[in-house]
Image (cartoon, rainbow, N blue to C red; front, side):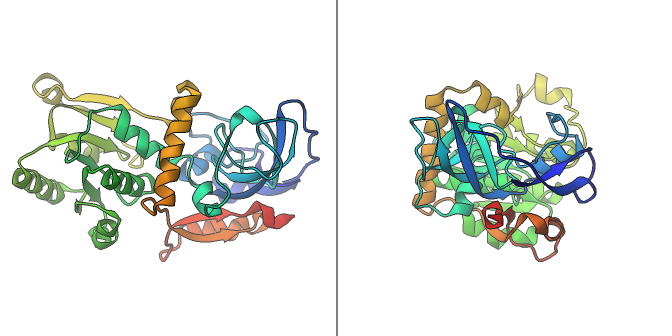
Length: 329
């Protein structure tokens, strides 16, 4: 069973290595899944560094999400040939896994494998943040930073499908055309000039933003607060800037701004089966209708992991980097 593993925490290029292990037997209530594709997410790199929200027991195989096909089953609901995604941590950078059936969600077999491999994290994070923190009616405005990130692009597309408007703050304003093609209403720089452009847009619309989504922290997060209506909520789900959010008292006392956090892992652990199924059914419908797309740059076999990691930092990268473990078989 070929797999990528880490035996110590550190930079992925330094600690990731190929390994193999015997395949466990499939026990009662378990299935064996052949993994078809698994993306490299920023959270995976943090997990490998040991700086993520959880630290695995080593040695361990990374891979937050993946899509696979059941090839052996001792669980009646999941027959051989069923395509599945992992609701628990996927450990997806390997060719096969034996896993309990209740850790999986069956998905349609006629949708593209890369789309399904990237379904669990970014789209679901965007969907839940747009539904769980503010009563957003069509026409409401959502502001976000890191709008060109994987989650940010999903927010744009899902918000557009829901009839919401988005203000999207980015470090590279050259991305404006690309993000507007996804459905962005306004793209501006993540700086003081960008904030003024956003305020001008809001004045013209006669509204304030009802929800802010923060993946950066620091000054970027503070800029969002001036765009929010009284009593609005800012949701922090990332810390790309690696700077804390220090909140001026005026936003708490005079504006009653609410501050929340979101972590999909926690939501999956707390949500009911019906809530989880409902979320992914809605996202699958958007996929089927062509309303949700995550671009793919390249797919790599597991032994080419160094090339895949190098591609992450390529200036001309256009989308996600995925492993295609099934090619090892």
